[in-house]
Amino acid sequence: MLSNDRCAAPSTLSSLATVWVLKPEGYEKAAIGDNGVNCLVTRGWSAPFDTALFGWEKLVAPVCYDAVASGAPLHEQFLRAELGLKGKSHDEIKQEVYAAYADGRLHALTSVGLSYMYSDAQVLGPTVGHWHPHLMIHAPYNTGALLGPNTITSGDALIVEGEGTPRAIIAVPVNGRAGHIMAVDGRQP
Image 1 (tube, rainbow, N blue to C red):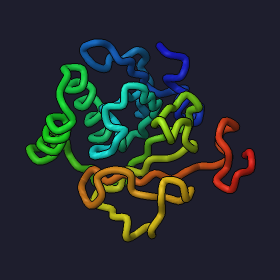
Image 2: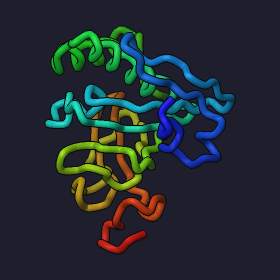
Image 3: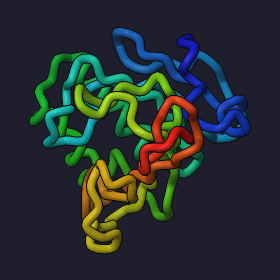
Image 4: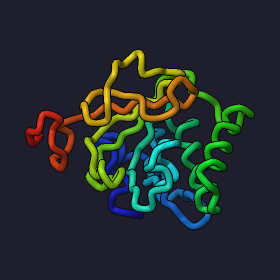
């Protein structure tokens, strides 16, 4: 187990979480929790589709999914890892993920779920690096029009994946949650 497997969420959640570690054949349970939260470290095939970050070999993204997001969002990551480890291309992984939602292997959430990405171990891209600690809100069918014209550097909530689809994800920076990140206004939290 990596030392950062549980560092993505507040310890009140992650200390009782199930922890998954990546093996050559996919994710495997390393610790069984009892609160419905699941923690793992995702890699390059977990990055948003159609971005330069997808498949980036140095991507390290510790994440903990709440009980709701431990449904389709967590299982989508398992599927992406399985396909990525088999050497599938971006287009093949994207096609398979969308097919899994269409044929019912993955079910769109019926309520909002959260995933936490507070870890200072995250490396989200060559220019992004250790981005702000943030919540990922799994908000099916949400669109950026509901949030405003925000950008990755504005420090405001923005759609980062699947806009308008069952896979829509909103990232919300949580400044002050970790000392390793400068606040959006440039001050140390």
